[in-house]
Amino acid sequence: MSAVDVPAPGASPDTLRVITGLRRRSRLRVALVVAVAAAACLALLLMTFGLGAAGVPPERSLPALFGVGDRFDLLVVRELRLPRGLAAMVAGLAFGLAGALFQSTLRNNLASPDILGISGGASLGAVTAVVGYGASGTTVNLAAGAGALAAAVAIWVLAWRNGLHGIRFVLVGVGIAYLCTSLISWRLAEAELREAGTVLLWTVGSVADVRDGALGALVAGVSVLVLLTLPVAREQRALALGDEHAQGLGLGPNRSRVVALLIGVGLVALATAVAGPVAFVALISPAIARRLVDDGGPALAASAAIGAALTMGADVIGQYGLPAGLTAPVGIVTGLVGAPYLLWLLARSERKARP
Image (tube, rainbow, N blue to C red; front, top):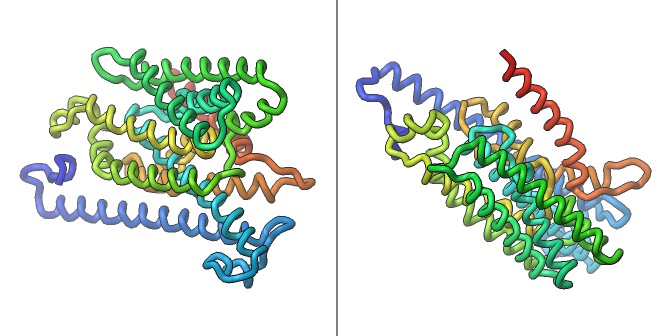
């Protein structure tokens, strides 16, 4: 049991019962949000099997999911639709959880990895590998991960002043994001037409061409980082109370922030290395999760589940829900939804800042 969970000395039995009841209701609410989001992901995945010109009807797609059926059904379900759907869900989970970690640790609702330049660093790494060195496949994925980590290190070095402070971290991150965007544009301007088309998806985000090896690495890496998040989750509530309260509860604020942000950077690096910089999922998912859970906490589990559902839903809309037979990568759809939310959030923050 951590210091955060220890009841206050001298608390009455009635107070303890009230606290226990509130915790139980909060956990039930989190479980309900996660269950609904997981059910939505599963329903969307099964629905994709039957959509499009090559869709397979349910009476054939469900057996094909378990390896029973003709070669065409197995190709569509197990080799095309299933890996794409799983990549969207796992990448969305990673972005949602990373966004919740960044926002709760830095105590800023704008502290999203795509706004802070972490995703931009991953895109820059991938674009540089393709345009500068003609790389492909796993090498591009590794370069994207290295780019995300390099951007995070740069932000850390420039923002650290006797500790890690949220406002400075966000401002430095926005500057790094602009720098990465400028370097990507420069690389694209120098690239040949075919190279530019190849790396374009690394600037918007897509799960259209995820291979089994990349998907396996994504699932394994995200699973490890999710397990590492479990002990961190309890410390987030203490950090939200301020550094003095956190120290009083036996926590080192700087150490806790560094660990949480390192996990967030790892999640973004893994997801971006496979799916590219899917915009605004890390920004929107925690906001929705906190509103649904409404317990004053960081809502990490709910953010992860909602991130998976949002990304999966956006990919389905981009492929099958646009008019006139148009298609769009998942990052375009999330960007169309997330940009108005960001403008609203900025306007709301400005109104709150006025006396």
